[in-house]
Length: 395
Ligand SMILES: Cc1cc2nc3c(=O)[nH]c(=O)nc-3n(C[C@H](O)[C@H](O)[C@H](O)COP(=O)(O)OP(=O)(O)OC[C@H]3O[C@@H](n4cnc5c(N)ncnc54)[C@H](O)[C@@H]3O)c2cc1C
Image: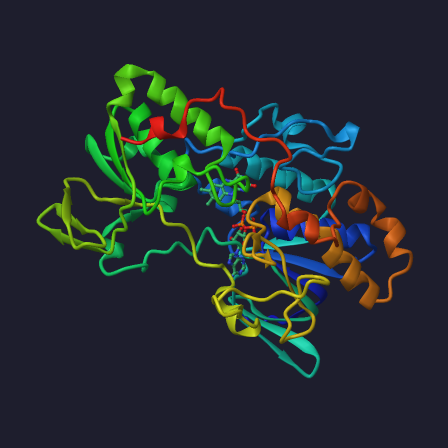
């Protein structure tokens, strides 16, 4: 291991949308003593998505009307404009992230993995495979994708986590069991059925029937559209079995068969390796102890600037952000805090005219200090009943 010691004013850990977005805001606020590091490469999570997967939040180049593209990470760029598509595939979205990093000349260094972080005598020391990095402020933006919940119940490791699939067409077999009925599980099922396979999807509840207005708590319109399209295609519909209210608690493997047991200990058998689409750990990983946690075990972030309430100077950007029980797990949600974090750090560093410099962030909704607005998702009008009844999804 190299003993090189690096110093920086602000260390951003993770070069995904959260880290690059905050770094661009910091530069805009006048912070140039800045370093972005990544264990892998820019946009690594997106480059590792299954080949068939695309963003479910739509991209549209509406910036000039003050409505920044939902998947943009700064107020002045648009993945729709850059990629010419509405639902970018992961690897293409990673190209957009790289283009933003290049455009803003962000100081990104790849191949540096942080394994521990501590604060001593007012400075942060990040232990990495390239030696220690010393910083005055740290923004943790390491995402969740590389922390799949593969240990959620006994035998879960016998399943294949959906995030580990590079290409659905390479899986052998004709009949699959998918565990998890939210976005990743339904996406897996739809891709497998499109490839001519049959799929039994086991879900704790019945997310395809939920009418919760927050897409963090129900299936997105994009996924519901895809489900409806499949169910209308009579030749394909029979290949998808949506099984609700099934909580898989255990998996056993024996001689090429997998036995799944639910909450009532009722067994079912899969002849192919079950696919586990149960999401990810929070992603705070090695810095989890540096954040306080609420009674539900969720990390606590300061409402002022998403800072640790235990360790001043340590900020968080990304999908584990939660305020007042509202999840910020989409890019359009957590980007609303990029300007807030940048304003706080730049101000503490004594930078001048920070508010003015960050005005584009404020105008575009990337500097949202009013958390009330993000916690009430009720729509003023009732959903129309012109769409197929949700019940028609259930078997
Ligand atoms: C299946 C799926 C579908 C999704 N669809 C959408 C969607 O349609 N729209 C949407 O808005 N969001 C979507 N999301 C969520 C979105 O992908 C995440 O919110 C987003 O990737 C989070 O960005 P991030 O920068 O925090 O994390 P990431 O994109 O994961 O980036 C984190 C980076 O940190 C690096 N890193 C990790 N650990 C370390 C370490 N210890 N040291 C150094 N570097 C490290 C990683 O290599 C990685 O490059 C989806 C997520 C999943 C899993």
